Amino acid sequence: MTDIHKGLVGVVVDETAISEVSTETSALLYRGYPAHDLADQCSFEEVAFLLWHGELPTAQQLAEFETLERSLRGLDPVVKDVIDTLPLAAHPMDVLRTAVSVMGARDASLRTAPAHGRTADASENNQRRALELFAQIPAVVAYDQRRRRGLHAVEPRDDLGYSANFLHMVFGEVPDLVVVTAFDVSMIMYAEHSFNASTFTARVITSTRADLYSAVVGAIGALKGPLHGGANEAVMQAFAEIGSANNVGRWVKDMLTHKRLIMGFGHRVYKDGDSRVPTLKAALDTLIEEYQRQDIAELYDALESSVADALGLKPNLDYPSGPAYHLMGFDTATFTPLFAASRVVGWTAHIMEQQQSNALIRPLSLYTGPPERAVSAGEPLDDQAE
Ligand SMILES: CC(=O)SCCNC(=O)CCNC(=O)[C@H](O)C(C)(C)COP(=O)(O)OP(=O)(O)OC[C@H]1O[C@@H](n2cnc3c(N)ncnc32)[C@H](O)[C@@H]1OP(=O)(O)O
Ligand SMILES: O=C([O-])CC(=O)C(=O)O
Image (cartoon, rainbow, N blue to C red; front, side):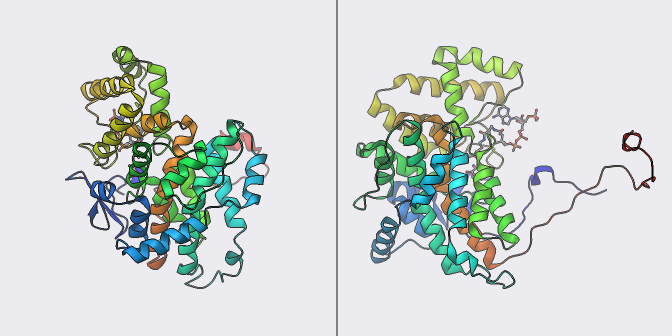
């Protein structure tokens, strides 16, 4: 009897030195450091450097890294033109996926890479490409949200850190420090999570020796789904549907009656709570205080305890991030692109790790279709199908 691991549940498919997601202790380590400590003490730029290079940067390395990242923030006018051809009703994840695809098609260095070689896509090129995506995805997200609102694009500022500049490009001004800090924390918490569906997608694509952009485009596609990154958007839709804490009980009952999933709850690996939630919830609390939105805190708590009572499920990272991004002023459909802006660090770290020790990823399947049969010449196709 062949063992089938549907959804690859519990299957260890490879090694990684980038992060550890522990089921037993519900902990998350980035290159050995607890992610919550990094969120407390480091900037997103430092964490990106750590995930890519394995060590936190020295002061000089950080200064060089920041200077380079800031110099790469401007968006290629051709990418802007392509975005402008897309309907305003297109989902922002589709816009981002298209933008990254255009960036890949315009990277001349890809065209000179020999397809047959082991080093078909040299690692220093990939480090550059990863940094460019890191620096430019915020500009894509900002450009797209602003065009939907009928606003002109805002150019990046090289005197601001990653998160302050991101918010400046989206909203045309730098918000209070409390908002910038909460956003930076969200970027750090979303940056990396071992072999989740989108990262695994990127590794599968990389295993065929396809280029980094193809792998990132595929990862964006996988992240869009509501069982993965799309859940942060779905959480906010649920909040809007519920309206206020008083309606939570009725709403949850209705969801259970109709056997619908409650987005932002449950996790494939963490069965006793997502290790990242307390850190992002603390950041959400600072935003609730900043914007004086106790109503959101009440709804959040009521839904969390109602789902715990009804299903025994705990929130995942997408639960606090939904209301946090809403309070910051992002359109709901833009939440998952924010996740992508952060996770591009993890994706590209995994792409480079996969390239360093590659094996084509190609599992087996158990065939359950009809047994071998003969094609009868002259028999009408309809009869054959019966
Ligand atoms: C940052 C992230 O990407 S985290 C994930 C974000 N996704 C979501 O929040 C979507 C909602 N959650 C889910 O769909 C799931 O919990 C997943 C996809 C995250 C994990 O799924 P799995 O590990 O496959 O768990 P699985 O689906 O086997 O769940 C076990 C049982 O709990 C139920 N369940 C799990 N999550 C939920 C939920 N959010 N709402 C209602 N029921 C749920 C399942 O229906 C299943 O019930 P069954 O045994 O009667 O069939
Ligand atoms: O690990 C997972 O399956 C999903 C997740 O939480 C993430 O990618 O951040």
